[in-house]
Length: 395
Image (cartoon, rainbow, N blue to C red; front, side):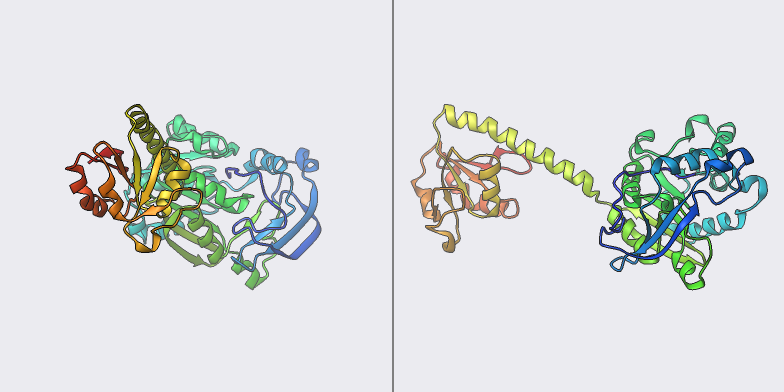
């Protein structure tokens, strides 16, 4: 059954947009598990209070004060063998086939079909078998006892009887990840969706099927609010969850009591960009440190051309003590001072006072080429002009 993700569920806020929620439905006692269990296990299924709230900001509905996560994990690991087995009983075949038809209606959101597909919460593997028939290379994970039999059908290394974690699968490995009736079981759906980004190839796809809570509300469906379901999605909240997690080209369709969605991993992974920013800053710091040693040993004067935000960052994060002054072509900056730096900004005429061996650092990424062209005549006089991007080097 489902993978589990997240530990920090806050009772009074939405688990999609983190805004305050309002309670609209509650019962003092409701069984923790709602399907038949063996007689010897019936006493292990307690009845607990259930409380459902909605978020006006993103139109999400969720359970507040949910049961302890360890209790729910016990339910999924121990009792889900009594959940219907689609392969054996035929229950759910039509629903699975309809979801597959939805995917096939939107080939533009499937980058490399057929490729490698992972189903998280694969249960008895019926949907995997549909993908297998279409020549997808299938993988699955699920803690349910039903999953054990799949290892006899598929390579045992491709089927994991466990809750999902991104570490169990390679980075950027799958073309498609399938979540059927999984997200509604999670205390933090956005966290799981964000983890899946790691395992998807660039522009890989995620296929999601969840109950449509709008259908529940419109028809007053008894039994749809239960302890196992911590999240209840609308079109709006599912879209926000996917977009927040790093997906784009989001397609969502209402199919009666279900929502179907197909989305692609965004070309730009913000998490990866954050890591790259840290690496780029370290690169700049290390390369400038090497030049600083040279300037100190040869007693060179150092000036920065550009007195804007970039220079403020450069002075405060990388270097400050060695800079003799700032130069800028904007008359509005002349004679003024950058906050945190005690030397005034000079007009370009200051450049004529520089001597061979002095250094000018071009402090701009956007206007770097333009500034370099204006400084070439000083290079001919023996003044060193240093650019910072893509690497620190003299022109």
